[in-house]
Picture 1: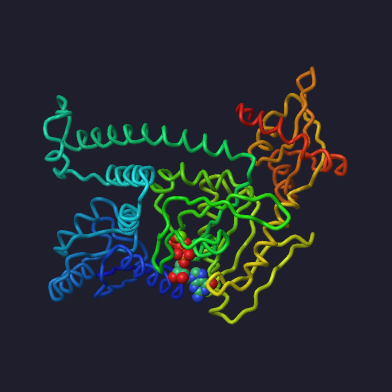
Picture 2: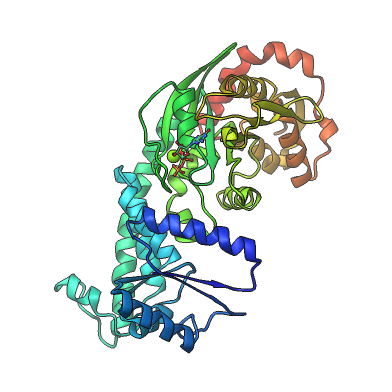
Length: 440
Ligand SMILES: Nc1nc2c(ncn2[C@@H]2O[C@H](COP(=O)(O)OP(=O)(O)OP(=O)(O)O)[C@@H](O)[C@H]2O)c(=O)[nH]1
Ligand SMILES: [Mg+2]
C-alpha cells in the first residue's frame, strides 16, 4: 500500500510525486495494490496520519491482505511504530525505501560500505525505546555498561560500527583520490541529473559501449563509471556516469556518498541531463541543483543536456548564451539524434574555458588562490620573494565572475589574454605538480 499526504502542496505536484513514489516502490521490489491519500496541514506527531486515516489504512491492509505500508514522507521512529501497531503491517518510509533500493543496487565494495553507513545513521536517528533487535544480534560483545539504558547501548553499538566502516571508507577514498591524481592530465566530464533522465544511455552512446546498466528503473547506476572518450580536435576526456539524484535525497545518503560524488566535484565540466518529457522537469532540475549545492559542486561549469526529445517530436539543437557559448543541447540519446551536436558542444565548452590571463595576488589572498586551484583554473604559477604570487589562469568566464563576487575581487584584475594562450601547453606541468603536492 502506498500512503501519501498532501501537506498544503499544489495538486499537480502531488500527482507527479505520487507517480514517482510508485516507480520507487516498484524499483524496491514492491507491488503497489492500494493507494491511500489524505490532506493535512501538518503531519500528526504520533502516527503521522490522523486516527481516521489510520483506521482506513488498517482496514485496507486486512481486507487486501497487505504486508507493507509505504509512506511517501520521512517518518520519525515513534510515528513508524505507531503506524505499524495501528495497521498491523510493516511500515517503510520514503527514506527507508530509497535506502533499500540503494542497498540492493550497490555493487562495488565502496558502494556497499557507503550504503551501510547511511542505513546505520538512519537507524540511529530513529531508535525507539523498546527496540531489542540489536541486543539479540550483538551476542555478548559490548555488554551494557552500568546505568546504561537499552537505548544508549544500541546507540553506542551503532556508532561504533559506523566509525569502523568510515575508517574503511576513508582508505578507499584515499585510493580513489590517488587514481584521480594519476589522471590529472586528462579532464573529467561528469554526467549528473535526476534518476532515469538518461545519463547512462548518453554515457554508453558517447563512449561507444554497450556495457553498463540502462534500465527503466530508478537508481540503475550507483557506482560511478569512468570511460575515456575521444573528442574531435581535442585531447580525450574521461567521462563519468554517476548515481541519479531524487527529490529529498536522504541526507544520510548524500553524506555517505561524498567519496563517489567526489567524481562530480572534481570534474572540469558537468553535463546536467534532463528528461525533456518529464512533466515536472523544472522541479527535478531544481532538486539536482540543490544536491549539487550540498556536495559543493554548484560552482562548476555546467552544460544542460535536454534528453528524450524524440518523445516530444523536438529537433536536436544547441542554445547559446550571450557570449555564443553552448549552454543547452537538445538531444535524444535513445535515437542518437543530436549526439554529434553534444560532442561538439562539449569540445567547445572545454576549449573556451578560457578567460585566459595573468593575475597578481598578494600574500593575503591565499583563500582566493586556493579557490582558483580548487576549480583547476591555474595553468602556471610563480611565487615572488615577498610571498605574493603571479598566476596564469584559464577559467570559465561565468565561473570567474562568480568567484570574484564570492571573494570580493575586482574581475578586471585578470590581464592580457593572448600571451598566456600560447604559453599554456608548455607551462601546464608545473601547475599540475604544484597541485599534486597539495598546494591549496
Ligand atoms: N524515449 C527515450 N528514452 C530514453 C532516451 N534516453 C534514455 N531513455 C530511456 O530512459 C530510461 C533511463 O535511462 P538511463 O540511461 O538508465 O537513465 P539514468 O539517468 O542513467 O538513470 P539512473 O542510473 O537510474 O540515475 C531507459 O529506459 C532508457 O532506455 C531517449 O533519448 N529517448
Ligand atoms: Mg544510470
